[in-house]
Image (cartoon, rainbow, N blue to C red; front, side, top):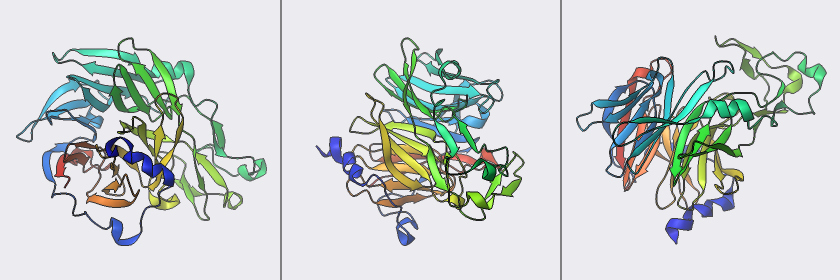
Length: 372
């Protein structure tokens, strides 16, 4: 019974506060010293491990899907078009699934697909995810930004970007994939939704739209107004009011309870300036209902759930992998490592990507550690 239901125990504490002080200061005695399996990878942001512990990794910025060899080299399984992003690798019964996209943030340039590679190396396009976004825009009725408690006169001094108030816009950036039976579940970081795809027919539907992630604006907050990093201080009249940021689903995994667990970035600053606002949602795969399972996590980009229900979360800008105990809901730092992005558990082994850095994305690596 523990395997099936232990993760449900954490639902009694739907909001899990991250421990302060020594609890997250370093690695716990429960893991062995990690070893490097591959290095010098370009933006490795997604990872999968098959039943034979063969490691697959996406080099997102290079548009590559690679297999890690025993000698530390990699073999390219798929090479996308220049400028395209390859992500969300998953493997089931000899078939590899992944997503490929381009144009996130630019409705005119959006393209995105769920694809597969069979045991013979044949690549198949399963579904057009950007096309589904154009036709449906799942979060189109969801409101972001400030609520009615902030006056229009106050917002006259708010910059054009980010918008003061808006509804879900046309955007798609498929990022994470989980597969069960004939269904693939895609975490789309642009659509703010979890999509269901029938891997046989290619039919796409919306399972869940994640709710906004509000944050109270503190005094002195500075916000970026362009891609060059120019910032301005927010008007004094918005201080103390909530701004509803978009949820940004990044990874999706099945727990031993049959539910989907989804990591979500906060849709705003990823640094601690507004707090550690990342979360994990628990989504019912039959009804699509969702609720926060854990929060107060800095930049959660990857998730793995062990057979006993313990969750391991890659905190990219927190420079560590966090463990959430399935029974006590306690958080602790499992492993201190720079720039972790993806994490997987296979038996008593934990695999992760690390070394991600926007300034030099070519220093990525894959590591392996034992779980004692």
